[in-house]
Image (cartoon, rainbow, N blue to C red; front, side, top):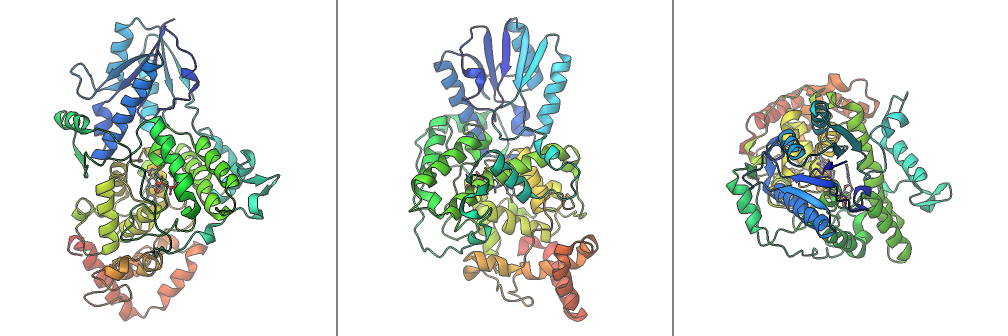
Length: 510
Ligand code: FAD
Ligand code: SF4
């Protein structure tokens, strides 16, 4: 039997059982394809990071003796289409069986099923051996339940996988240290300088440009610093444990004008490309915590484990439970278009200017910037979730639909009507002021609702609640806010709405 095994760009799992033995009758196929660069417009750093990681992965496989066919974006014989490439390889190499690993995106899952149905040879599909859960585990766990609470899923996962457990009890006798993870960053402890990876990406960037792949965002070829090989990913994980973990939880929800990354791990690309597995990340972090308990508190490590064992597996389960309908949901009926400043960062609102400019410069923003700054603003200005999704899917280095879509359309835009979040994540300027220093240098005044310099988040917030109150009238968690809305005198609310609507119609002037 002669096998052709497909490896997709986000399936760079060198620990997969496929690679335990070298078999001369197996060919591995990898391809940089226009179908993947073009399904949405991507940040240039994202395209570079994926292609470079794929090339490194292929080189490692070849060094271990595996037979690899690799199509670069610049190769003249690259057909740039998955089905055509597979068919050509099958024909040219007299393949008798085609094999692939379960894709994490619905679109590729459908495409591969169709390709296999069209093939004249046998095909076989394998698990990626990456996640803790199967695609359907969350659905089965919540069977018959009305609320899909992340917290109950997370506790089940802690018990099932014995992570941070003492027998049947959670480490420290508390499941969740969320309340301890809300410090404002005021320079209390210095943020360590990032680990530097030396790499030459000039040629690859030129190849991408020559192929006329349309991208956006910035790249500095001399300082591109994402881990793009297994050894760099392991070094990044090591750096996180040694230098960042001890303050991770404390400043998890903070933002600061001078600190783009604070104590965040920047491991999402390493995991989403599968160069690192979530299990090895958690195991390493938990082991490091047990060895250094005098230096690291449980709230730091639990805060981190919750993101990976909890949120990451949870959003994946929601994706597979709800797709394909999830990608079309717009329960709040929002229809506005994104303003131009989402592509330039040119706005007088410091919080938005910082979060968007950083996204364009680094292909990265941390969770609170994505949720409570850009996501909050997008929802308050009632932007169409398709537009918001396309922007998030393109801009971030770690954006792959299975994780981007539930986070953006669900958690941040509430377009799923509350499947994922029990209430919309919206706030006025006061939350941003509480958790960052953005307001101190802003053109606008965070305390004001009216006047030239009033913080746009303030008027937009009350306007949003008023416009969408019908959607929330049966939501107990919104009752307090709707009561406060009702107490605003009619004349004041009228003024708020005029100001908010002016902002929504003229976003690029704000
Ligand atoms: P850290 O803060 O160090 O967290 C550690 C790890 O936890 C991350 O690497 C990530 O793997 C995981 N994690 C944390 N929060 C989440 C979450 N909500 N869902 C899934 N995993 C989580 N994450 C992506 O990987 N891809 C996306 O496309 C993406 N889009 C997002 C869109 C919005 C609107 C929001 C609110 C969040 C999104 N996230 C996404 C989740 C989170 O913001 C990123 O995982 C995180 O910022 C990546 O940076 P980090 O590795 O430094 O994370
Ligand atoms: Fe953002 Fe308002 Fe603060 Fe300015 S004042 S940084 S717009 S929250």
